[in-house]
Length: 378
Image (tube, rainbow, N blue to C red; front, side, top):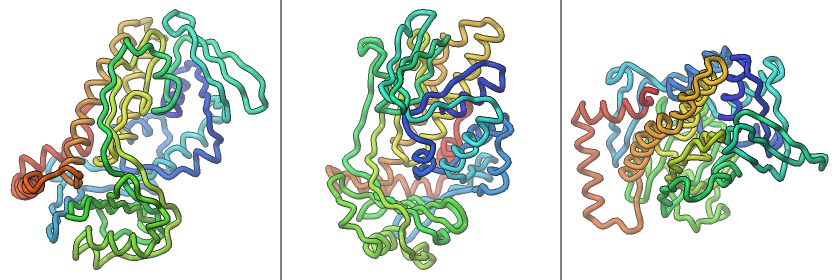
């Protein structure tokens, strides 16, 4: 979100500096999500930074919900006349980083001791320590907190100024990345008595797979062979027949949470992305919500600087949160539908079965899922 917003500021002739805790090498080594809504792709296109995306991305006209031996295809193209784009977040980040020098967007990497000052005044500023140990101060008109859930931006807002809403899920996703072709041309979200599974991909030759595991699981207890065996069981016989196995090149366990902080603007401080909200990865909304924050924030800041319109910035939080809560609802509902919760009774299991059975036969239900999956309007 910081890179995307910075590029929009520079494209409008507004000065911007990105202050980043990590190194460029570390950022490009992180494996992240890769399903992009049309809104996200449109933002990158507007910046003219979509050349590699258009050449390498995969266009998906649908995805699947699996329940035992049944695949329920949600036909996005037919239901809502839209599609999603599969393009790794790491690759999108690389495109934005590569364009910084050419577009005069300054990025200062490997900083520490970042602090926000006077954001409730018209003269906020930032202090930080660079990697050589020297202290610095940046004076600004606005500070945009794109520093994640554990960053300093949200912490700079007094607790009484906003409310936090959170749901921590009692399981995580064990994921692997492997250089093997995907088992299906489209994503599969699987509901199984052993737990959830997801079959996804980064390209036609690199696959990303996940299975639900308890939070206390250890990676060393999941050698590749055990993972592949369990994945095949959960995906069901059809996808399992097409499953190509190979050595994992990355393996990790990610916890899941839903979180919203309901004050995304405090004076001259704006929060974007994970600093203000977290969604479980079910439904692929995290990256896309950060992009929609950029849409609202960049529009408001451009109006402020170029049109002297101060009301736009004042309305940023309301507009962004309206879309955030709708995306939170979709991610939460899909997570509830497709996962096993430790305290679920046979009743909850039958409700999942009934819901999936209803979805399989109802165009109205599939349309609702499709319009949320491709992304609600901004």
